[in-house]
Length: 119
Image (cartoon, rainbow, N blue to C red):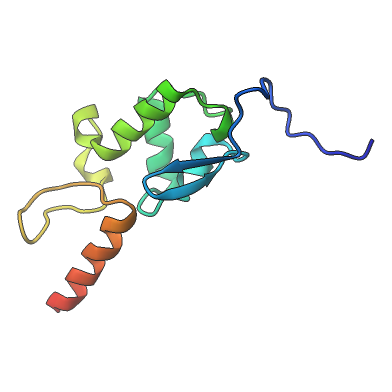
């Protein structure tokens, strides 16, 4: 047999495509690298989020349980509540309201557009 296996332990609840923050995520990739397909999430940020959520980094994204996905999404959306340092976030001292946040997916594009219009 010439078929290639990904070495997935439990094939019954494996998701090939996950939908998180308006982004399709490849379930066959390792968790840390799969999260980087969300705009505004880089490799270092996704690694930090996986550690904070106690998610096994050797797992593939499609193998995650709903609870693990929920923890990941909560930390990605609200990083400061989980003691992620301000210098790690991609929107520091916003000109409008002075807040420091991590901007993701569609918000990232609209903020970039606003910033360019301000120039």
